[in-house]
Image (cartoon, rainbow, N blue to C red; front, side):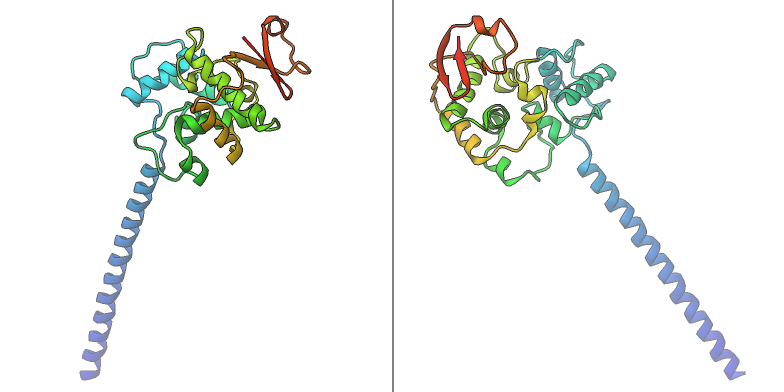
Length: 242
C-alpha cells in the first residue's frame, strides 16, 4: 500500500513538472512571436501604400518634379503613388517593391525620422546632401582628376542656383534624363573618400567650371544640342559649358 502511494505521488509530481514545462515553453514561444513581430515592425518599410503624412507629401512632390508622378500632392500613399515609386525604383536600380525604405529614401535625397541608424561608416561620416553629391560625382566622374570631380559637383550646385533647374541637390541629380549615372544605376554605387572630399569642396564654394551648367564627353556625347553650348573650360575628358 505504501509502495502504491509513493508511486502515485511520483507520477503526480512528474505530471506537475511536465505541465509547468509545457506552460513555460508555450510562454517562451509566445514571447518569441512578440519579439519577431517587434523586429518586423522595426525593419518594416518607412512608407508604403496606405501611409499618410508630410513625408508622403515630400515623396510625391519630388517624384512629380522629376517626372515620375502626375497625381495630387496630398500626402496619401495610394496606388498612383506606389506606381510612381516603382517607376523611380526601376529607373534607379533599386528593388522594385513600391515601398519607400531606407535605400529609396536615400535615393530621393531624404532622411526618414523613423529610419534605422544602421548606415555604413562612410554614409554616417558624410550624410545628406554631401553624400548624395558624392554619389553623383563618383558615378559620373570617378575616372577623372580630383579637379574634374569637383567640377562635376560644381555643375550640380550651379544648377541648384539657376531658375532653369530644380532648387535642391536631389532635385537636380534626379531630374529625369539629366545624368547618365542615374539612368544606368551607377548613382547607387558607394562613393570613395575622394568623391566625398570633392563634394565637400564643391559645397564649400570651389567651382573650377566658372559657373557652368553643363558638361559632356565629346567622344561619347550623342546630342547635337549639347555641342551648341558655349564652351568655358575643358577638364580631363569633360567639356564644361554654359
